Picture 1 (cartoon, helix red, strand yellow):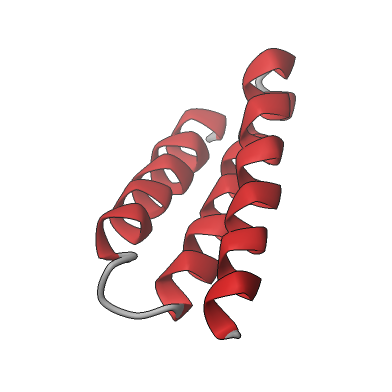
Picture 2 (spheres, helix red, strand yellow; picture 1 turned 120 degrees about the vertical axis):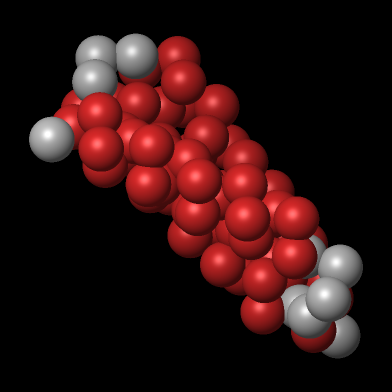
Length: 69
């Protein structure tokens, strides 16, 4: 079950990353995908992955806010 969640979260994140250039909302969706991937990292015991994905989520949120201005 955890593996299926991880594959879904990472796939969502990658698709949102690919769509970022189309609309600003996809940057926000990418940030959500990073959060979901971070949760997967922590749940699977791969805490370095969880930390890095959390950092990417913060970066993506910053990019989203700068893009709205």
